[in-house]
Each structure stands twice: as structure tokens, then as C-alpha cells.
Image 1 (cartoon, rainbow, N blue to C red):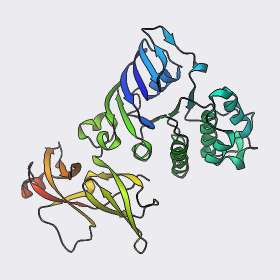
Image 2 (tube, rainbow, N blue to C red):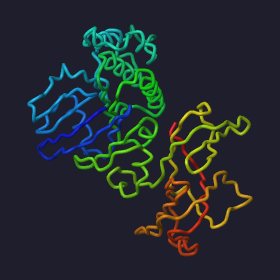
Image 3 (cartoon, rainbow, N blue to C red):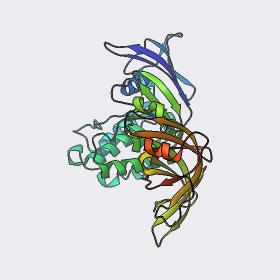
Length: 356
């Protein structure tokens, strides 16, 4: 459980943030300059708030009313920066040992060998940071922070400097450590794909304030939050479960609250949860169920809202089994098909990019 209620005035910026999260990975999301890094620095103790309180798993780290401000070295907060910040004169083993030595023996809940195995670091132990790739450096940085046995692990855009293959590599390791060690993680990012892959709870920030908190499926698809999130392309985030795989055609069937979806093959076992984002521009609308079409996913629903844009487009919200599916069509199509709230329709989904 993470409880944060703080305010801090800086030269040209004011942080005034309140949120509570009891999830495993809490993602701080928003545009550059929204206050995400300032907030994690406050949690870490690098920046002292003007007022408020911070509590992690029932332990108070800061309480202005009680005059409590736990020193950085006593907060047991692990911090992974964008650039890793490894000690260049130490080997990988030396960097990891440094983190391990910071934790009092009675407070350790992870073993050196456990972290090395979990992050695939054994082949790297005798190498120095100058001989590591960007992805390898970040794995070592995560390992060093984890070996301090932190109450909470802070990760400030740890993938920002990596290329796409290295990002996918690190995302896999973050998922693994969260699943095995259960350490609470506060993860800073402005990348939608990282939110979809990792986050249990999203805290959307703008101008130093929290504008929305909730599951990714609740927050990421809300059209009124698009300006604050920086997501200019509308869409819907869906939590689904793997049902089966078609090996012949390399397709996977998923169940979600609104029915079933068929997507490109997913590397996940039946019963496993998966999250995906359907772009509004990939959804077409029909008044009757179409036949003899190549589109695999046709969902029955009802128009909830239709909002015209400044251009020729119109944003629709379609209720599909309780899931609000976003669709963008032309205003001409809205008039021609009489797409008003309450209208029964069929949504044709042309493409479904996966979050994993």
C-alpha cells in the first residue's frame, strides 16, 4: 500500500499530489513536465515536501504535521534511474554487492543468487559497466536496487535510453521480478506500451496534479483525458484472457467482458491474462452483421455517445458488454447511418496491436 499526499513549491512549478495505490506496479504517467520525476524524488527523500505525508506499507516516511522526515538512507527505497548510474570502477558483482551491503541482514528478503538468476546476470558478474550494453546496464541497476531489499522500488523511465529490442528485454525482467518477489514498484513513464504491459494502477499526472487514478483499462481509454496524457490517438484498453491457440494460422482467441477476440498469435498459456489497446481508427461500424468479409472480429454493441471533431471526424463510444469501445468515423458516416446514442450497431475491428 502506497499513500501519498504532498505539496511542494519549486521555482516555476508546484507539485500538489494525492493518490493511494494498493497494487503491485503503480505507473506515474503523463506528459514531460507533469511532475512525475519530482514526485518519485519526493518519495525517495531527495526532495522534501512543504507539507503532507508519505506512507509505504504502513510505514510513515514523511509527515509534516508530526515533524517526521525519515532520512534517505533509512527509507529503504530502491531507485533505478534512466541511465543506470553504475559505479564504473566496480565489476557487475561489485555493483551488486554494494546494494546488498546497504540492507541490514535482518531486513533482507532477497538473496544475491536469487536476484542474479532472476535478472540473468550470472554471465556478466566479472565484467565492468563499460563492457555492457544499455539493456545489461539497466538489468544490473535493477538488481543493485533490488538487493537493498527496499520497501518500494522506484523506476524513473528506465527504458527511455534503450532501443526497442532492449526495451522488450527489460520489460520481461520487470514482469518477472514483480511476479516472483512481489516488491511494490512505482514506475515512471510516458510510453503507452509500457503502461499496457506493466501497470496494475495508472496515476495520470498533469501540471503537478493527479487528474485520474485507476486500472489502465479505466484511465487510458477516457477521451477527455487525452490532452493530459499526450495520447492523441483515441483507443480502448481491454483486459482479456487467453482461451486457445490456432497453430495452423498462428492466431490466438481471447475472452473479454464484451465477448471474444481473435488476434495474432500470443506467447501466453491458456488462462493467462493479457492487455491490449484497440485504436479508434481501426474500428468500423455496420448496422447489420456483415458476411463474407476478411475482418475476424465483429462485436455487437450500442452507441453511447457521438462527438464531432473540428475536422471531418466523429468520435463514437460503443457499449460492448459493458466495455466502452472507441471508434473514429467520418461525420458523413454518422449522418448516413444515423449513429446516435441508443443505436444498435456492429463494430468491425480491423487490427489489434498487442501490448506484449
